[in-house]
Amino acid sequence: MQKKLRGRPPSPNSRRAAARRAHVSERMLYYSQEVARSGREDLKAAVARGEMTIAAAIRELRGTTLPDRYDKLVLAWNRCSNDDQVRFLMVLASLGLVTLGTHRARSVLVERI
Image (cartoon, rainbow, N blue to C red; front, side, top):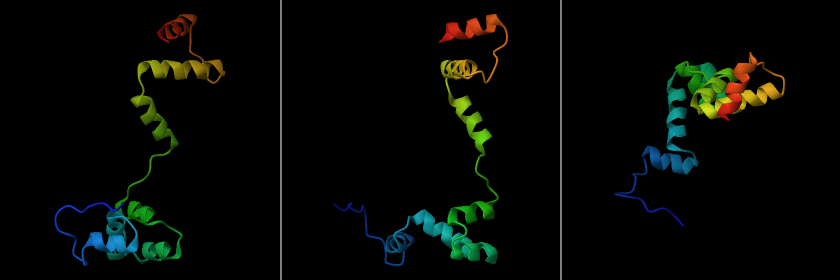
């Protein structure tokens, strides 16, 4: 079943129509055009050879980086509830990977779960 288009159909020269013909998203088409217009021959050649994805070329152009494993862990930790944080620390302690300090600190953590 095909989606109904709202409003008027896209013109055959629009970015939406071109993306449909190429079977890619409009954003990917925009990114590829951005790489092509950048003037960075090294990025264009790397993408053409398949050594680099368009998304990686965009990150290189814009100077953005993906978060490393530590940054991902910090983000996950900050998004967790206190109870989840305590449960995580208790599992690490039971595996001998961390020490939770005094007996009083451990008992407080155990009371919280």
